[in-house]
Image (cartoon, rainbow, N blue to C red; front, side, top):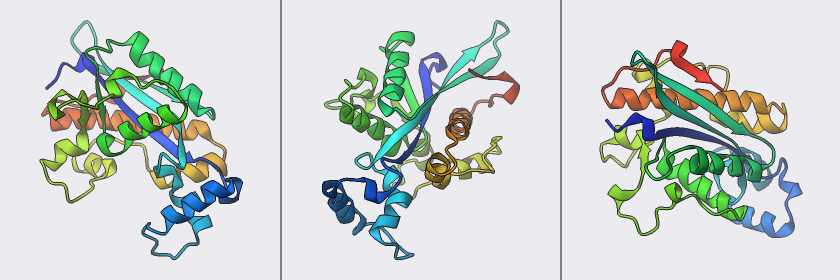
Length: 238
């Protein structure tokens, strides 16, 4: 197992860039229509409705509203703990700047390793793309261009579980159930984030959901590394 003091566990929550398809300009509507034509659409939803349902997962059409992070800690009696914090807001650029400040100013950026579930396919590239859209320089820990695979400081718990099998996606919730990891996500799942944000206007609920994902991911990493998990009493939410 890696030195946990250098490991930053993270999760992001994303929503569609606009609440409604018709709020986009004509140029972007045309681009979304092209994208939507290639998406799996079992219910035969029109492009306008599909936008609200699916746009959030694409960095070109969505935006980040929350990044939650977790840092492992150890007490004087060697008890492992976790400190968790979320950066949430309607202004994506501010959320990204706060996250950038954390990893560059408050942490040992040179030895930092990022960990997320499905992070290599979703979280890490999404964050990088939105940094560019907002014209913010990408932190070095996220810059992988020209690096060999073993030089990239990223850990993906889904990749750890796959053991080289590239055929299937395995959800965090399924692995949490499999490894009996405590989770408080019964009242919300990822498919609800867009409606909770735009219709319920409950950003704090989304931030709490994101924080819980970080806690579960941290414990999943420990399980996959054959180590004891962290009891909720040793988790501090800042």
